[in-house]
Length: 330
Length: 258
Image (tube, rainbow over all chains, first blue to last red; front, side, top):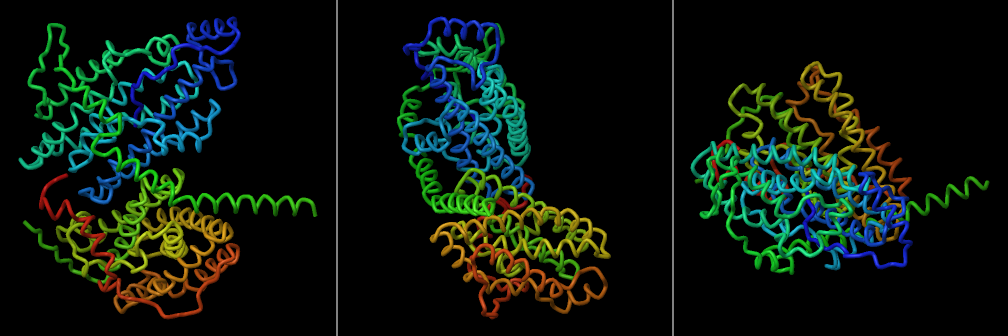
């Protein structure tokens, strides 16, 4: 679904690498060339991207859980099929992104183990619960909408495999976003009870969604390197503002109110939002969100209970290879 | 406020379509329970894919049942507003997922049948059923391949996977007989060339099973005592829980558009 703007890039490449190579690398970036897996790259660039892409992959996979929570309870067969297909898409994004991360030299197993050990992050938004059917609409509309804002610029990211993965992911996300909005539209045109369900859901998700763009620029410390490497092309606050400006009219069209009484439209047409509660954001990142423990427990359980299946597949593959070698030798 | 169950006029053709629709929906629902929890991402994808195929088949069959019945019972009413005693699916498909081996063996038993069944149904004199069969046959062939490959991996994998696969076969075997049973209403449809006699598929079904089981170093049970009841609404206790989840929105918020 989406990678959190965590600003965790390494500040500098301190390895003993050739300064001339580094200069050449930066010149390629400046010329908007794509860096490919076999190209020389500073170790900090590799590390930053591995972290960002794998966090993005973890987010897709953990993101299956809040929406998966409603697959068995979707209100109609059409909604059930659409939701299942959507969550399946997220899984596909995860696979795609793990493959992109693997081109940087880390295996999927290593990356997943780091996540299960709590050492790697995933997007904070998935630590919030899906309580009503309206949350499925809100997630598509807002969470995927925010993801698109973040990911469209990533289609031009300097690292080729990530940029190419993002092109496909963005196409699917924009479909999800429309699907989510359509769920909201149906609710808002429905009974009073349905409309209240939509509003209540928006109230719960609005602020956590704004936090998805990461800490405010004023407190960001590491954006510079990512910007220099053209991994990041817009600041957290720029993307957040773009998202708010695009979303407010959509909410008005639905007849819903943004749960921010202080929100005003400025002379340039931008919707100015009130101060975000960054304490909540920090708490969720620290593991204290409403669902952090449940999400990790669910992923660990699936991984642990699937161990014997993965072992069986590996054992069978080994046996088969052995038999084929034996047969070839005959 | 509770929503009353709908009443369905179960003429032989309505009942026939409904039974197959219920099979597909309940099995699809069971598979969808894996989404996000499978042993590997590839299987989250695959099981969801199969679930989507089955839910798609269910929707077509419900829509057809609804059309034949000629009342106002659309696909959602048929799925969401019938109680356990009105559901007509095989006992096999409502069995819980259990471990991955149990899910795969359930799928294998069903898909090995569905593959043959839909291929034969392509010759139905009922053009709608024949068209649904043409699509479902392609899907079932893939489902069977997926399940067969996994059964071989599990059976011939590790001691643990072998034991789990064998236990799943032994556990689910008694639910397979119902696939081949026919009642009077269906017999009439068979005579009319609308339905096919599933009994004629049993030999080939067993052949598929024994080929895969032998490659998987697994053994098919000898006992021939078979559980029945799903087709007439006498289900296992498991289905009630599945339905209470599946139907919760429509039961809680009756009569709304979603």
